[in-house]
Image (tube, rainbow, N blue to C red):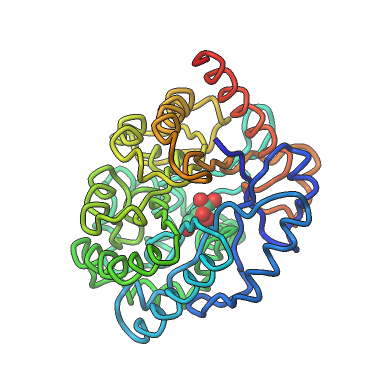
Length: 393
Ligand code: DNO
């Protein structure tokens, strides 16, 4: 597997030099300065590529080329945004960048309620807690129909939780949920999030899936021509938020979207932490089933609770069988022998890491994207990969 690292561009707190020192060879990055919906200019792509290559690294994966909400809802200016998206894919292919990660989550991209969840060893982790999320939805946002989204037990806990929260804690919770996490799409304020939810609220899962398939039918042929593979990232968390549709949460979802547009350019990102946040997703079975359509991997672990809550645990210690997952991915890589160079190796990145030591007091460090925490994750994963490879020899 190719070891990659997500880099947020020149203003990242982690430098390309540090990434190289950590041992990764590939960079995962995006042109975050280009507004969502606009075309990624060829010159900006070239410039980013040059900076990466000058540091002795390669731009392995684009994460993400985000989709404008109008594309997701097929309303407003979606035709123009799709044309721009196609142009971005052509520009990436022409620059020799062949893998693109994206997602189809409505309104909020990846979502957590607590960004500094303290573990017994004092390291900080990211956590999604259903009680907090429901408290926000029911009592801060006061979304119409929110009560239908939660069990009575969750509503009772959320009511108590909300009562006990100070105004400051309520504000912090809102910020964690709607201000947008690193690399995520959509940063909203209180009124903005209501309007965005409204825009999606009448689309059920079927209609939303149709919109995704319609997008793929427009973009996959362009990707094929440009030599680019598209790798959709699953919903994180993999269940409905704010009563909105979710169509990339399960093996059935992945199967439906691959079979609706059966092209080798239409593929998946196997994000272990996202799919793994549902106990009914068998990740090893999914890797074996979707094998040659997996173009990118995020390796991360979680500990799940019964009500859907979870926190991000150490990379090798959680409900995901990371050793089994890596083993299945190595099997898949073996199957790919003989494919053109660059197609047999699957790029993986240590997805997120705990915030450790002095990075805890550095406000510039992006939640989940510390240097030390990810380096720890990468080193552990590298050990697993090397050990499994040695057994195969
Ligand atoms: C979180 C990430 C997300 C993800 C995008 C993919 O750390 O996994 O930012 O990259 O949602 O489009």
